[in-house]
Amino acid sequence: MLILAATPIGNLSDASPRLLEHLQTSKFIAAEDTRSLLKLANSLGVKINARLFSLHEHNEGDRLDQILEIAKDEPVLVVSDAGMPTVSDPGFLLVRAAVAAGVEITVVPGPSAVLSALAVSGLPTDRFTFEGFLPRKQGDRRKMFASLAREPRTMVFFESPHRILESLQDAAQELGEGRQATVSRELTKKFEHTERGTLEQLVDWARSEPRGEMVLVIAGAAVIEIKTEDLVGQVIALTEEGMRLKEAVAEIASSAGASKSELYQLVLEQRQASKN
Image (cartoon, rainbow, N blue to C red; front, side):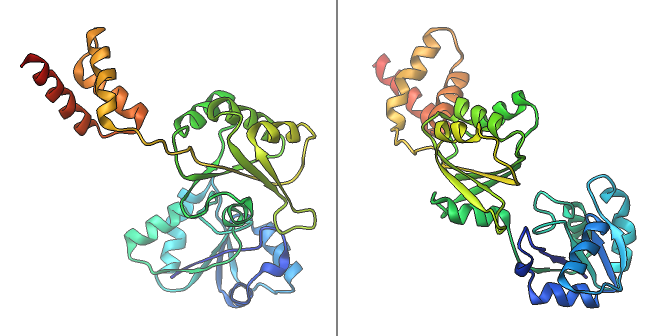
């Protein structure tokens, strides 16, 4: 069995009794950083007697077979440095391989930076999307934000303090300066803070060089109701300029978030009506 266990994201008091029990009793533990695990255990007053395996982004593929062989007969506890394993942390490849091998998987839930930042944001929480760490290069970040410009769900991102200003500037450029957003830093720690406002306002705030681990939450795009019938003229205009019908339909439908098949049929009907 694999046991995925969440560890504190800041405040050690968030360590669950189940986590403490598994740390004390497990014979095998796969950890993102074994040194960080031992430091955590010491801070929690827990003595670890398990055989430890490092499981990080650079060696996860090489460790799969070794850990799975053990997990077929014995429980293996899997932890990351903070939060839940596999969520922007090592463990996904191991879990996928365990599923394929028929190894049972269970979870010890706990702290989550994603859900914590979302909960305190004041932005809609009924539907959201977690996008992980933002790309380091500006061009890649802008492409990512551009691809999410019409995303209606609240979006959650991880970002480092030394890039938060540039990322907010890129978000404002691609999503609009008036889009509502929040930045939560040092969640569950002594100096926890959430800054709320428009992306333009958050850019000004970030110029003060805030420190700490960052979670950026951005409101989804406003849903604009557009009738498919209103798009027919736009498609016809593109075809009159020389664009093929299917390409014109795909472009207009994509930009408006409309059904391509429905729009295509309406254009055909409009063309037929014009001939009669």
